[in-house]
Image (cartoon, rainbow, N blue to C red; front, side, top):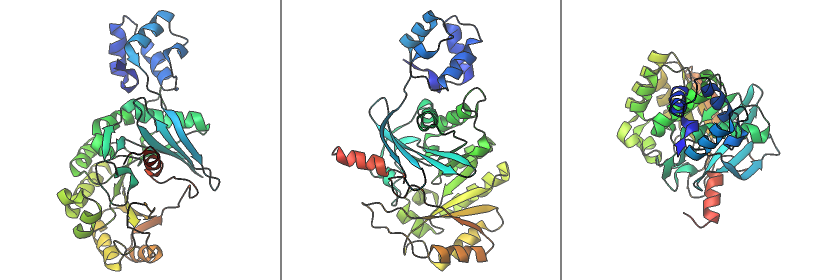
Length: 343
């Protein structure tokens, strides 16, 4: 069966041409797919014969709400979606004054092994398809009734570890006949796959690149982020500088504040020295505790921020949303797995 929703318009045109359909059908079918139809019968301006042919040759994989949590504090909504193969992923809808942001997953599980993240505890199961990524945005919007203006690829999985799918997703979600969300309203987070960062830079996309840094030195970063053992901090920052030089887009560096691990003054000074001469923004993140991890939130967030600012670094502290629900990445899926007796 053909995954029709993962096709771009050129592929869809060629596919429909093979079925003997005129070119104008492409826009009709594409628009229906990106309105969130769950069956081909809903495509009412297509002939019955074409709808039956599509149902026999193609597959739609809309997710089903497995669990849904709504924060009484700030209206944040956490979805645990069940996919067509039974696997579950998470999506979070966050409300801000400047618009509504959806944080989506790119993989079922993750193989990066970061010590502070619940998403990686059971490893990677599989990559998501472009359709499954689009559907997180689309069905979150449809279920919540809240219009989505911004997308963050910072949920379960490492987006650049599913590179081709993510590039297709970006193309689809940006298309004017689809959700039409501009690249400048999209942020992509990576733990630092440097070859893929270089490849992303070559594409000259105007999205925001967020690098999950979390430590400025190799010894610390390699302990909490295994990817660093093959990359190294210096190589990562060289790649980030190349990215800025090619795209002109300032990078955001994500930094989870961990008590006694990465929150000392010398680490703030070292981070500032890495950023010298290249525009960048540091986003300090109060650590979300993971039951299986011994790591605890830092008590030095304000002091670390002040130290960075003394070097002229732009710093913000992420506001914690959904504090009364399992809004942090991987927590709700992990809870579901434990209840089902899966490690």
